[in-house]
Image (cartoon, rainbow over all chains, first blue to last red):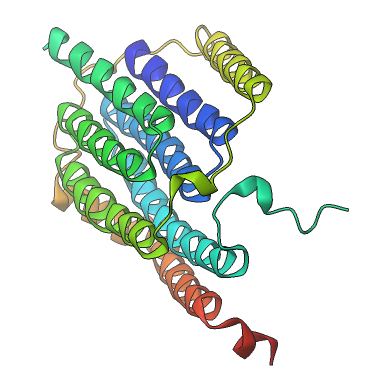
Length: 97
Length: 167
């Protein structure tokens, strides 16, 4: 069990690290997907160890939310690209005072 | 069996790192697809067969195709993306490493994971999952359909031309 706990923590940290280091908005969304998947893997590991199917249902709902989030996020990125002609997150600073 | 999960874990971490570190976004998408396939292999080893198939169909099939489609549509050239500053890179590495250490230190001894004796092995089957989903979790299931409709409407609204929204 410790194996899956450590593996999921490492995957989640890689996703968070990618959020900090990358500038492309699409890659940032992909890092969010990576973090969501690490949590899913940990839920499935819990379900296997406690012999219950409830965590797998939670994984279904996570997948649903991830699909909705990817759709809305990508359409926001397309809007930003139309407006700024780039997907660089550091140029997306119109709200800065 | 033991060697298999170690190899799978190492490959998963390697491909996840390549997602973050590769320069071109399309390479990142392809490595992310590889990561999802490896996570599905973990699911199969953990007795979640149906979830493994769903993960491949929904993530590697649908969501990643959506990402690739947007990448091709926007026709990005890499020179438009500014380079991350050197100090920012170092601080990102430090923050990511500290985050990893904090999470491991917090969770290492907090729970004593011992597998329960006589665990059921049929939890990943469609029959068991369907019975749980449509009896215990029926209301969240219905609410998720409302979430999908709102996401669809929101995506359509955002994808409209700017003038139409302002008017």
